[in-house]
Image (cartoon, rainbow, N blue to C red; front, side, top):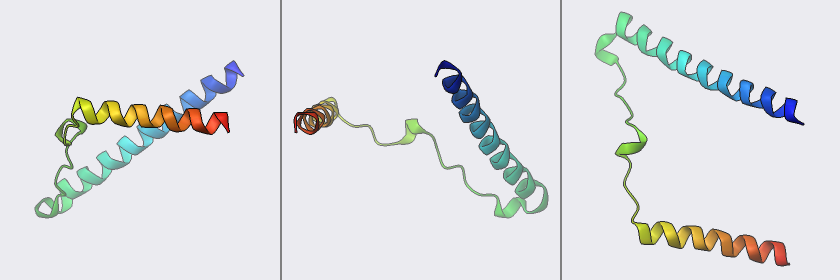
Length: 73
């Protein structure tokens, strides 16, 4: 079981690296061949709208309530 976790972690890290390299290759191709059609940067998680603490707590509380109801049934 421990070995499977290590293998899955390595596989996930490999998939992330492959995705990053694919995106880099795409951007390099645009920059070299068609710089005027270069896609805009999509932004990061920090650019997303921030959720207030009250809303976040309500979401977490609702999740745990649903989880408790599901396991009690």
